[in-house]
Image (cartoon, rainbow, N blue to C red; front, top):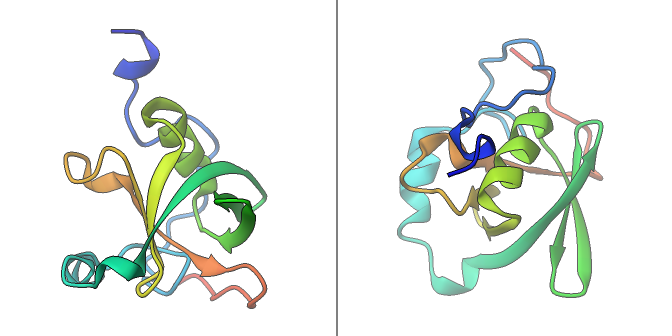
Length: 122
């Protein structure tokens, strides 16, 4: 086991201000995670986390690059660096599941399409 594997999944980058919003791109609402369990197979898309600039995350879906907003991309990238970049995107609910789900509930992230204006924090 490496030192990197022992780091907490909360990440080491600068954290954004606390936010209680569960709007797209902010906090994950537990009900949405539960609803993902009953979505059809075609609602799930395998993606690769590529990186982020500001609050805009880039994921690869096959040969297509997609951009999404996330309130805490630093934590997402830190966790992806530990778990690997492969993830599943539930397109119906806009949730990104990194490989440590369900063992690590903090490995689910809410996404918002980057071409839409960001929702305000609460």
